[in-house]
Image (cartoon, rainbow, N blue to C red; front, side):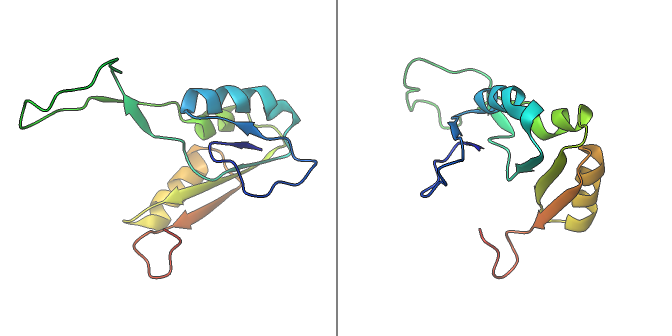
Length: 126
């Protein structure tokens, strides 16, 4: 199991690799993928990250502050390109036209299954 959040309970036979960013997640998955039968990707670590990381505090001087972001690697899409007999399951968090967007992701990322979530629906787990 590769996770950014340590589970409260973990079975003894389960190996846990903890990560804290997209690059670490990608490296860990690339390292373990050859031995994987089922890939269950619950969520992206982050779709974007800050383009610049400063070593100092940003002082509150301007009334408007722009934060420039850059895309992170789409780990699941990358794995879909090299997929063999591993079962790939992905999740889609959508608020508009969910079925269409989830279906598009299912095909674009070469998934076997996709779970569609809408955080705006009553009873959603968000």
